[in-house]
Length: 520
Length: 67
Image 1 (cartoon, rainbow over the protein chains, first blue to last red):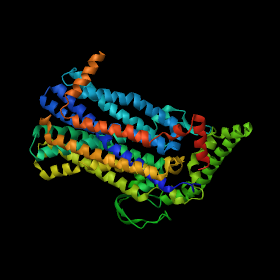
Image 2 (image 1 turned 180 degrees about the horizontal axis):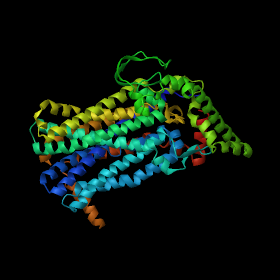
Image 3 (image 1 turned 30 degrees about the vertical axis):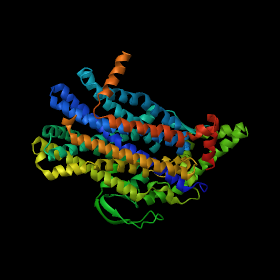
Image 4 (image 1 turned 180 degrees about the vertical axis):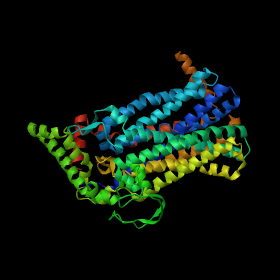
């Protein structure tokens, strides 16, 4: 059905969006996490009146400010791209995205921007308590901003609370609370925020370790480490729990993504979890039922336990999901494709009936888009209909990318928790600064949370391919038919601009760190 | 009250000792984003090509049923 589409257009559009989103995400988690750490430090200063805490608060506030200022509004580029490169998608989801993004714009962004100014300029100008309140409101505002975007993303992963209007080709919200409080949205928000706290904690521990290594600002670095490591331990544990819950939701709602994350080709009960593994490089996409590892270390039963909280649970593999498994009640993709094609054909007939003023046929077909049984039988698989006469492998996400990104995220997450725990334990024993190698580990760890965080988004977004809106709208039909050359031009402009901005941020942050809290 | 708020912001920016270069970068960034990218490269396609929502709906529907 998509013979007329230039696949390079889809790839360039996806590449451009991924570049922009990943660049934007360099700033977001640090803003979310560091804002709370700063607010906490600020609280200690206000409560104790100790000037050393003021110095500590101002230093981290400054780094927060640099990150906030350079990162702010980079996300708006994504909205430009929605309108230009993804116009079909924007129209299709418009009403769903409209509400959360409008709330974000009005409530969170203005709240954040107003209180950021008071937080920075308010020293000795507003009362201590109002100033402190501004720090906390900035922190809550940052998380609130993230909430609405994540709600929108969760809806794309698992569309709920909406009804497709066949006259307008738009999804309309029928239950706002179903959208906001879907299990996917709540968990996504909690996992993202807690991982942002963990990222910021590792950043503070690492920068403080640099001061301790150079025997500069020892009191500042020690106190910063204690606060950050407490945050790190709590956030690390919370990230594991929310990540675990997230895996269960993905296994239920997006089983092919879950199978790809674990490179599970053949479903099984008592399924083991691959702790570490290397996949073969010459994988053919023709078969999805074969063993595909060079080596792997497995934890017996752990995957079944992770999903069903019992080792007996059957975890479907990629082969089961693609070719179906009657014994387990799993429908084959071929059947989903047929059902999706029926839904597309119904929409086509409805439009034609409306154009020729055939009211009886039009009303009969329109009824179907309100009939829960028809929606569940056919419309639910709408997106699959686009894959008639296409390679079935296009419906399988990139397994290697999903597998490695997932494992990188998990392994690094465990490393951050251990590092935070060690930093806290040794700080409380007054021995954190004595182990040079540990300080070096903390410094070398600074960039790793960004890799983990971006890897998490790679799992989320690559793992759900080929869907933009899960099972309803594939990437192929969401993209605007532009000339691929035009998309390439903006891709390279973005790459150059983002690289320059990134270098500028690193330079400014490193300069400020080197000056230290004494060089305010 | 309004004057106080303006003075608060003006004093804040004036007394920033470390933010001048930062503000330069932010202004350049915003200029690139809104004056160059938005105007030259990122029109809202559906708004640009169609006059009303009915035409936009029709266009997207055609794309969905005749991809």
